[in-house]
Image (cartoon, rainbow, N blue to C red; front, side):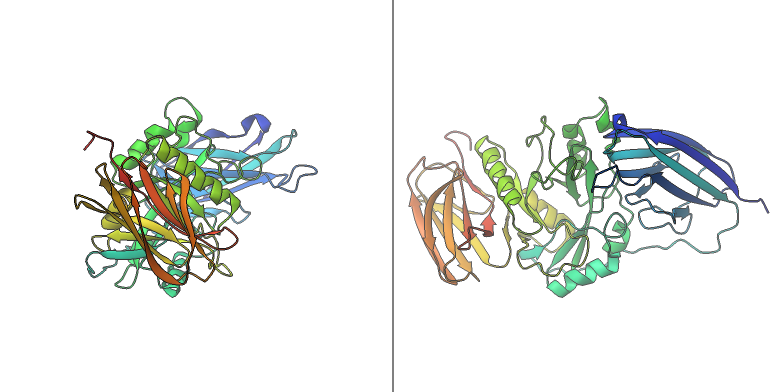
Length: 455
């Protein structure tokens, strides 16, 4: 039996490598059955810095991606035809040129950071058989409002929960659907889809985490390569269009989060995509915050510029939270509880965001045309009607026209309210529910008014 082989690679990174992807080719010989990678770098911290360097590794075989290491450690990771460490794709070890990519997200020192990459090749037969994940079945419920999350992480990237633990958490919350959206990998998607049942639909997603912004794609069936974004061969709008053409929802994630040095790529910095061809923007990430208010303001501004996109929320869970009381879910009106139906409804804007209260907005014209959230009405006199339930005394209801508060009123726990608008009053309108501290509790997506002659 052939003895294991070892490959040792080393080098250094400097501040010039910040936001760069460094390729390293590795020749994979015939007959390899298992590969073990141990990627380390030092020092972990720059002098007088409380933030650690952030450097990760992506591994590609001759046919495509096999691993995304978001958190290198001294134990390393392994890949063989039957299994892989979390974040990796199991499958035969293809001979030929593999490409390893060192991704430098954060390097805060003028002094070089040295890395070591130890690769062990095994030729021993693999006795185990590959695991086959069969999609879970969900009974049809027909048209209705469905609640769920679009953004969460597991041990397949930088989360602390394995896939069953994440799914069980959402089962306990009583939602109708949840999404796994690990950073730059689909390694957990087959398993998460296998856990769907009549009580919970599990969606496949990915967070495309680039150096200048993060985007969540929901409904994914294939991996999308963003690495060329650090050169001139691919732009973010082109990548977004690939996601859209594949039938997925493309969402700008947490656009107002801190960027460098706190979190490389977390802030949306694509000047050629504000919002460009994005289908949605995450205006509520995690708990409600001032950054989310800024994202909501961006959304309103983009609507005023004529863009049609959907406001969504994402808990961005990485571990079990102490509470998600002030986090929001998406409440979606879909034709059925299925991944395609949820994605289609979100694309159409048939949803609202809520941390608990129910908030419904409808409208009709004097001629009798009716609309719900996401629809477009012809110009003319329009009557709006909103109903709400689950608020607290002292909360306020706001009618927002073209991004400006048109009416605001304190409300009780439930009720309904109507307004009649003269022709030309607004191009779009939403309803917000806020607490006495002005924190958002719920917000609808818009109902639009067409310009004369556009219908």
